[in-house]
Amino acid sequence: MDEKKNIVQIRQRIDEIDDTVLSLLKERLKYARTIGALKKESSRSTWDPRREREIYERLLADNGENFPEKALKSIFHEIITACRLAQKSEKIAFLGPEATFTHLAGVKFFGQTAEYKAEESIDEVFHEVEKGRVQYGIVPVENSIEGAVFSTLDSFMKYRVKICGELRLPIRHNLVCQSGDIKDIQTVASHYQPLAQCREWLRKHMADVPTLEVFSTAGAAQMAANNPNIGAIASELAVKTYNVQVAVSGIEDYQGNTTRFLVIGRQTMAPSGSDKTSLLLGMSDRPGALNEALTVLSAKGINLTKIESRPIKGKQWKYLFFLDLVGHVEEPGIKEGCSILQQICAHYEWLGSYPKAETDEAVSEHV
Image (cartoon, rainbow, N blue to C red):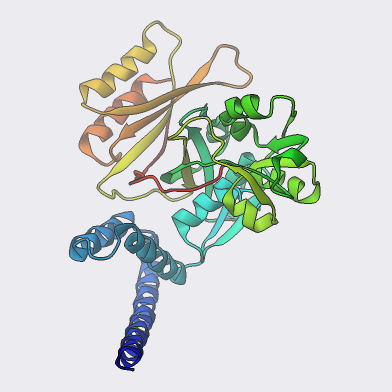
């Protein structure tokens, strides 16, 4: 009897704590709306990466490892994004349909309460952002195994948008079908990258089963839901969304398979304290032009984390180079280096400075 009484008392106290938390959340939302109104008067962006980073750092320091760190960050991520959206609603374009990796990456970055708009191609995501029909878009830019997503790089050459953020998410691929029995699968459908990332597993376990390339894993999951003989390489989110069963989980060929995503918009981001800068450069037609540009970065002590070339459409053997640098364009070294590059390069475009992805999040799907 005493034990039951203690449980009831403890539960009552938990209810009181929950009521207090809810009351404080409503108060936080009220103040967030007040800040939103003040920012609107001064035409300031509602998104302040430095402020958000400071909040996370303060909370984690105060926590003292008492509350699970990942859960704490996840909870406050939803609180912060919900309060930011209360200041101004945001519509996010992504490579659809629902339950693609890009969709889930958007939810990880912007939270559950944002409005999401599915597009049929990466090109359309860029188009919607440039035209102002959405505030932001989210697109895959590279995979740790298969390399660059060229349609994203090519879209930066076509549309005038800015990079506002990035995130990196590990990938876990699942073979799914209606029954959950691998013996029923006569065709395996998926996006070309998951098919490539599971190539060895498919060759070893399903050598006689043909593959079918479709525009997304979610589209493949829809096909599997409608045809008992089609299997799909898809996500756990797609399993829930399209009511299919997992036949085999974790069929990716390599551990550590990670996709990097970029958030694109039309506004530039203020320094957060831990940033990247992306550039699009075209070199003069003379020997050593690329080496000269790289020497500029080295001389300024700038860390180059990525360089990728893409052919210029309609101009044979002419290329543009995508560069990622550590630091914000407002930092003196980066600013000086970019100023020199602007003078010596035939084409110079600053694609944006934005907060670096902090940590990889565990996610089970792909584009």
